Amino acid sequence: MPNFLQFIEEDVQSKKTLLSAMPTSTKTNKRKYNEKIASFQEKYEEYRVAIKKYLDLKSKSFHINDTRNPNEINEKVASLENIKFILNPTNGYFEKMGFDTLLYQMSNYQDLKFSCLKDIINALLDKFDMAAARPKKENFDYTYYINEFMSSFLDIRHSGSNNYDQLTEIFEKIYWESPELIKHLELNFRKLIKKNEKKFIDYISKLQSDIKVRSGLSYESCLEKLLVTYRELNSLCKENISDVICLAKDGTIDINNYFEDSKIRSTTFSDLLIDPLNMSDEITLNKFYDNIEKLTSNVEEFANYVKFSPLIIDFKNRYLKQGTQDSVQSKGRSKNNSALKEIESKISKAEKKLSKLNKKVINYKFLNFNKKDNNQKDTKFESIKLANELSVLYDTYNEEYFKEVVLSKVSETFTVTDLLYLYYSFDFYKKTAIKRVYEVNNYDEIVKYSDSFDLFALNPTNVIVCAAALYNEENIARVIINKYRLLNINITEEDLNPEDLNTFLEKLKLIIRVREIENSSISVEKIWFIREVNKIDIANSAE
Amino acid sequence: MSKKGEVMKNKTKKADFDLSILKLSELISLNEKVVGFQQYLEENKLETENKGEDV
Image (cartoon, rainbow over all chains, first blue to last red; front, top):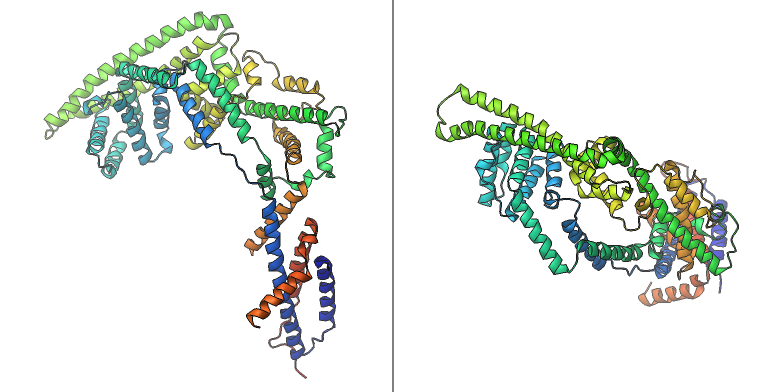
């Protein structure tokens, strides 16, 4: 049977010769020449379509379907994470109710639209409802304007209309008279949360009891179960052969580097070995692959450590450099405790004064709405001034509160992972620190950093940061290098340079993917073919 | 051409050239050669309007 490739090669040549021999000097010659071309084009379009159909079928036959279904295990993780969140002994009702996250969002209102603000307020009010602590209009008494705004807000909320258009106008009108309105609203909510503290504590306490009974888990057993479940999830979601095919198909990885005779492949292997390896010895080779997988996981963890090291350094400078470690724990703590109480008392006094002051203008609104009174203006002004002073006091209080928490946790054995967990437990402070350290002002960007921080903090495969003491300046990179050099893996300090980490990780991943391909039913050549067919599709769709 | 004729032609084509005997790299090369020749043909079409004189 003739080889079609050979036929095409010869056919193309002969057709080119034929065309070159055709006269083209006259109009008729040209027409005939073009007719010949058109007949060839018709034939070759038939060939192209038939070949493409065959290529598509062949490529499809090589695909390996991804049969993994992580949904069930993801749900299990989410449920355990929720239990862990509620039972977390590191934080209190404020964080468990989600007040810290919502108030952080509110304190960054400059990035938000009115619709977002409306959602935050509603979410806060929902929390109060959950704990049977529904606030009334008169509880929003931080300033005259807060009362005006929240009275309208509550009217709309309780009417169930969900039409807040009218409120946008009220907001805009008030905003020009009292630009600190949202800051004052945040403080008003803080005051109301504090006022209803017992109800929230009881609510959380009941929730914790219910969860413990329903799940049969304590905090510790939840952590153990979570670790096992995370490991299952990691193993299930580990890059597999269908992922490799997808990465090659869309060109994310260059499959040419995976052929056995590829120079890149051979140098990647040889560069990572101190002594050459007998590749034909299956046991030795598998051991090497296993070590590379572990190293990859360690390097990924290290990359996260590097990413968040400015946050770690900031934490150390801010909270741990107040003298010796002993004094941080004993003297520092008691001193801080009294400082916190002092600010609390100042806030309480100022808020009582503010409440008294506002009663005059808020009551005035209802009783004497037709009368004009210069005193009213003065009182409004005075209350805004006092609310602004309280804002400063609250900032100090928040800082001292976290300091108090930190000081109660730190010890000589305080590790990086303890720090990760501390920030994970205190969202408000974590986001505040991210904003300060990375100098990001955009709210969405802060949330992005925060989410990736949480992923790192929750990663159960973390091993290095679990052992690395925060006080100790030991070089984590050096620890990794020493460990793997003992296992005949040639890793250098340059490989772990922060700016070279991604290149190094790609080298490690190449080796892991080689193993994945070798253990699968597909060859590098077939993956290459899938990629080439996809390239044809891309070229066709671009035309 | 009648319907019957078309079927016959397709059958002949199938019998003439069996793509399954080609290696994967040859299949890609085959496609490249066909597409390459199509491009060659397109580029070599001659302009006919208002050009050249019939003798």
